[in-house]
Image (cartoon, rainbow, N blue to C red; front, side, top):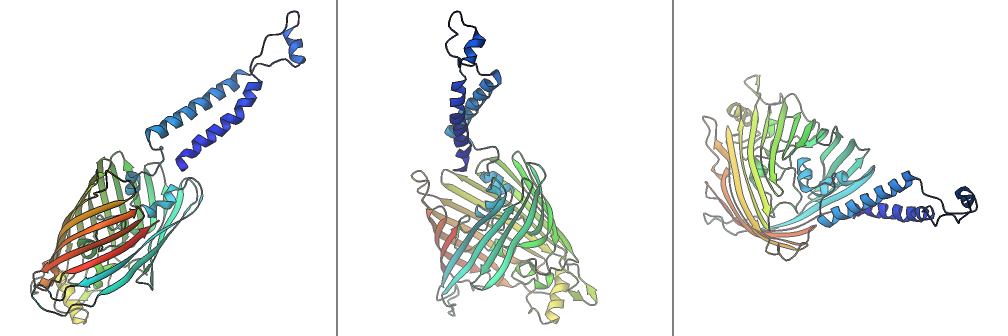
Length: 451
């Protein structure tokens, strides 16, 4: 709709200008024996000045060019294409304020509801299944404000599980050039395929991948600032933020170490960055890196404050074309001082014998195909399959025993149904096994929306 505004404006200008031009168009010459000056004073025709004719021609040329652009489907120079949106680290609805053509406020949002039903027996035949759960996982409102062509504000306010209110992100962008921006505030860490792009209409699965919950702990956000840019087929983001709080690490991964902008301890800072290459529309691949201390002067062992340097590295890729959707990710994390930290937390009664790992890893491959891709642009029915391995006890400190239940395999088979692009129903079945033999299969149903 917005892309047609210049056409209508040009057409209106042209229609208003044409009568005036017509009135000034040359008429028949002055009658014989009457001077041109006398004929003009008597109300004869006047010749339009050359500059007015040139302006009329310019408007006609501009109108013709705009009509041809719309006919060919060529995007506007400043259009927010999917590639530009991804370069900003934004899911579709989160980008609402960037689509504004003028100053002002913007609103958007998303939400999802999840039902989980568990197998009566685990893989070893033991009972004790959790009761079926029904949870309104989150309801989100995006609010943004474009101050001018250079400055804008964007935020995500979230209510989780019906009663917990969080700020998911809130930052100010300064657009230094068309290709380079600076960002400061509560930022999404730019790792993985889900953390920045976590709207339920964007990723497959009623539940987020385990790797992107335990090792890349989505939704992962911290306070800080940095730079983001896009040059040709390459885009990047690089931030400095507060680090994890390692007192929250457990045997099941890094998730408990997120500070989420809540009076975050910043004795140790962290760097996070991402580089993506998009050779053709719909296909991209890249890497992400996070490194920083996590001790925050909170974890002390034998009188020594531990640094707990934490590094998370990941590689990812995605290809979408003609209804086919293929995604893959691998993540690896290490934690320095993991043994001393595990002993310090155990002695404080915070953890049991299961340690924080020296190293953890996980990854998945996922394939989906929209069976209606050649028949409809609005409705989509996409069966998908995801195979995932995650081990948050890949290597543990000397003197500790691995928590085998944290070494698991997740095979998910499901279908993603979108009656319209902004509403999704996702249902899947997960076969879950682990090295301890306590894995339990489950059925999931998710209703999500974004606007």
